[in-house]
Amino acid sequence: MAALLAPASAGLGLRRGLLPALQAASRDDFDFLECAPENWIGVGGRLGAAFEALAARHPLTCHGLSLSLGGVEPLDETFLRRLREFLDRHRVTLYSEHLSCCADDGQLYDLMPVPFTEASVKNAAARIRRVQEALGRRIAVENVSYYAAPYQAMAEADFILAVLEEADCDLLLDVNNVHVNAINHGYDAADFLARMPSARIASYHVAGHYDEAEDLKVDTHGAAVIPEVWELLRQAYRLHGLRPTLLERDFNFPPFAELLAEVRRIRDLQHDAAPRQSALSERSEKWAVATGAANE
Image (cartoon, rainbow, N blue to C red):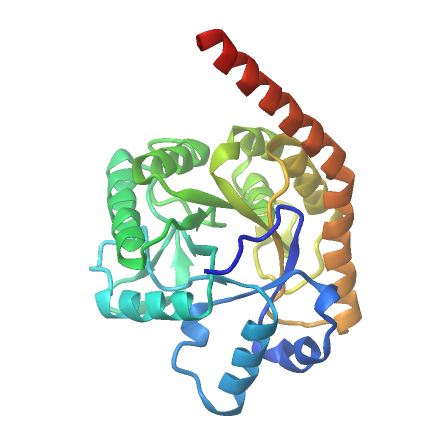
């Protein structure tokens, strides 16, 4: 296995449309790359060779698209075996998936919302536990954007917290999705952020979205990150500490220098948050020593 990513690290999505720029980039332009395994498993030829070279040169994280952790169709055990081989071969230390449904008698090619119910908690948690067993590793699940709520017996934050606890897995905290959902469904983004469990946060995502209307935002990953989302990321670092953070951009690619400027923005926010994180860690260590001494 490769070494874990440093908490203060900033990454970029490995997208086919960015391959030439990524191949020409300096090692110092970003700290890691993230890919969707489904888009690269079994790919050969020129594209496969380009991927292999990038994966050998840069630390790689993976963000899945097709496990349908919130669905009811049986998990694809054959794909899980291939996925484990891919993660092991490329020494991937961070694998995440969406807390959503994307299959119903076949792939839906979209991330559909799941009911926020106790039954849905238990269903998703059981599937996550099976995935972790099959992959031989902990995984992180992402809070997803959604536009219709099929049934809500509990709030979104309560649902996420319950799944994390029941499944004993980690969280990929997407701060753009927090902003989008807060606007679309009328809740306070800062309150939602504060409720997330620091100890389970494995990484962050940040991205741009599309403004369909004042009260309707669409999570597209096709635009620059807006100031409100940068501010949420700053708050996340303050509340929960630094974690590896990915800039997501899937299409409408600007000049590569603009993407690197956003990666530098992540690094700047991490640098600003580092003294606070060091102080928090130091206080935590002193507390642990004092508590241990008191209990002896």
